[in-house]
Length: 83
Image 1 (cartoon, rainbow, N blue to C red):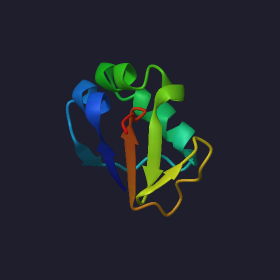
Image 2 (image 1 turned 120 degrees about the horizontal axis):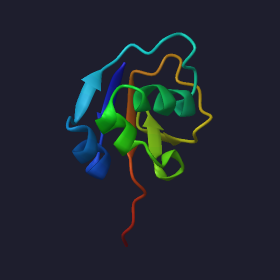
Image 3 (image 1 turned 45 degrees about the vertical axis):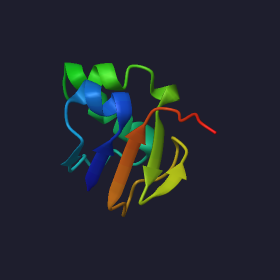
Image 4 (image 1 turned 135 degrees about the horizontal axis):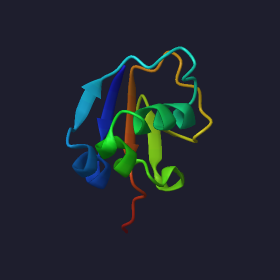
């Protein structure tokens, strides 16, 4: 699946997107964040506060317990503000 990173998540990891193949036991967005966090210091830093990270699966905002099975694209970004 393709994973995209935005704003400071991207800056901390150092890439805008990548193709990954998480293990079968990674079933939810929260599981994926945990797995990504173990991929190195940059990922650990980007996901050090997983409760503030927002996610979208195939362009639809989802909660941390959303299943990732069948997802073509998952995006991670910090909370947004604006008006």
